[in-house]
Image (cartoon, rainbow, N blue to C red; front, side, top):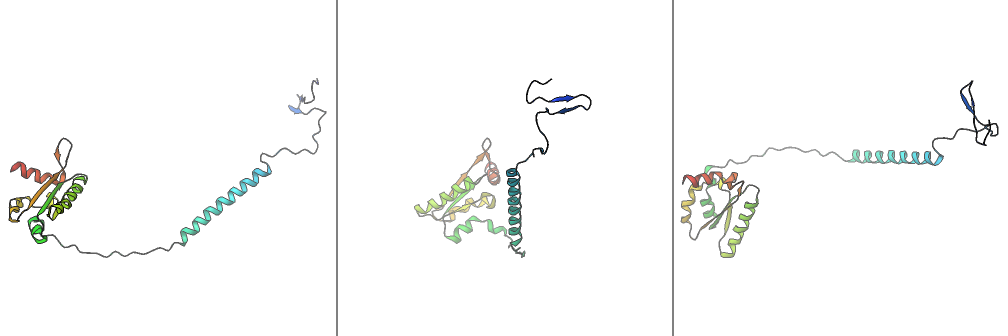
Length: 175
């Protein structure tokens, strides 16, 4: 039966669909999945990508490799008298010492500001970590005329002393 121009006939013996007798298929080639523009675009992208990768690879190989030598250095050992803040104050002509207790560095920064502020009042100052000083020397501070000790202590948690001020805190508690 033929009911339209685009009608196809089904051949039951070969199980194939045959085109209607009214259309010609001689000389037709099946359509390609990609058009000429698609293929051209893919070739250009692949060539550009290869050029980019080769260009970067060339730059990496052009960089000269520098050689470094490691030279050992010696650090003089600190003697037990180096932690005397009284000697440091006397030798540098200072009369203000600002001790800091800091966990994150904020207290140390503030102590530095306070030591610099002492210059406005005619007192050269220094900043000191209580962990690196012998705090028993505090009683000897009166040997330096017009001397002043300032304590800038931070806390953490529920008022706990910082790590570098723990020994000083225990020294105060045992008094």
